[in-house]
Image (tube, rainbow, N blue to C red):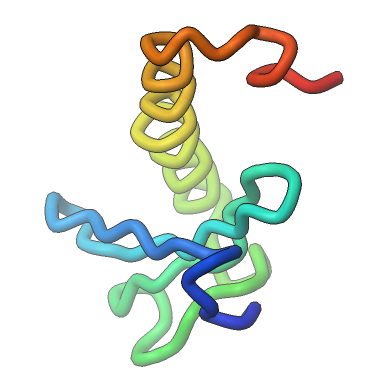
Length: 89
């Protein structure tokens, strides 16, 4: 698990089923570093896809894309941030 400093990492908590928390690293690009879901792994962060079934991994990626990345993109666009800064090649 990566360092939990609040400058380069943020925790996002989802209360709606499945209840879980994501650790997102913000060092140059947005990366999902770890997932905390006690129904998958008890009392520990999941930092590797090895602990996940394919369906769980797909669900987590979909949640990350639609409930985090899409929101960030929408907020950036509403603030007038140029696409060239949002979408780095």
